[in-house]
Amino acid sequence: MTSVSDPGFDTDTLAAYLQAQVPGFRGPLVATKFKGGQSNPTYRIDAASGCYVLRRKPPGKLLASAHAVDREYRVLRALEHGAVPVAAPLHLCEDTAVVGSAFYLMSYVPGRVYWDPALPELAPAQRGAIYDAALDSLIALAGLDVVAAGLADYGKPGNYFARQIARWSEQYRASETTTIAAMDQLIAALPAAAPADDGRVALVHGDFRLDNLMWSDEPRLLAVVDWELSTLGHPLADLGYFCMALRLPRNPVLPGLAGMDRAALGIPDEAALLARFATATGLDPGDAWPFHLAFHFFRLAAIAQGVMQRALQGNASNEQALAAGRMAATIAQMGWEVLDR
Image 1: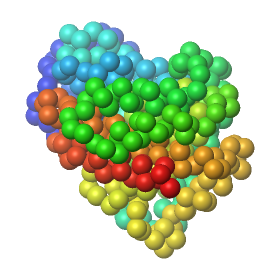
Image 2: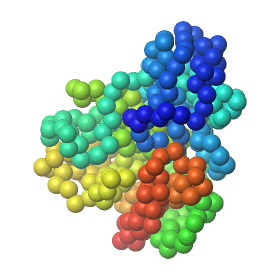
Image 3: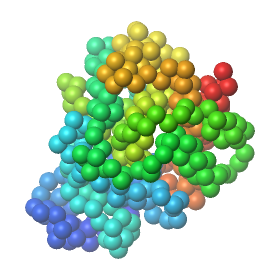
Image 4: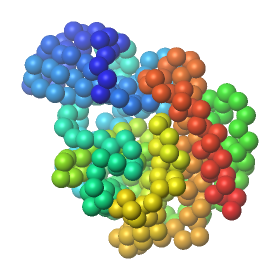
């Protein structure tokens, strides 16, 4: 967590607003910006009544449909008290006059975040437990009844992958700052490579990776965070994204596990993750697995390009935004190589 003396909004105004809107909330408050949050700036709120977390849209001109904190809040309400652990949602504010953009308030979860998927601070048995619990959460998401959870209208009908390819192609073109040949190749090839729609529908987190999970010391999964990209989609989507992220090269911005000895680390290999997921859910990607990986490399590259554009415009919320944006070409090339094989 990085201390910010000026969070970019008036804390007295925020305290007065929350005191009027959130039962039991009492000011004054101090806002401290968390590390990370490339997309939606996130703050720890220390108030007289306790500790909370505030997540807001970034300031400035934004891409259409991006940074939808209202959707995040809706998902937290739907999942609260269920099999997938989340922070308790407390209040949604769509009045931009309070902090300069829409935001929501949730409970503070006093857990640990692991930024490096190699988990260097843990022993092999603990690493294995972390990955097993992460996969258990993916299995729970795949089995969630979206109708019973009140999320039947949370996404559009039709082939999830076809819709996502079209959406992220548009988002990429809208934030394009230079030509990336691999992105052009993926945009052209992915639609034909997408598997046929099998009618399976699940809540997709959209950014399910290790640093969006919070843990106790045991370790036990306490909360899945950052639901900004969530929608209704195919239950294999989060599994593909999770495994794609583990294939990334070792780097300080978006670290992966490429070239590392997973067996020595105590981390299950990709085949083991796929097999356990398939056994629990009945879903096996089979020959379509290269598509799933390539699609997520493409999507992550499009997201990185959006971060790059916001950084160049001065709207990105993290000092590493430019470094993340510069990885778009590398990520796209990895996606094209997976698909081209």
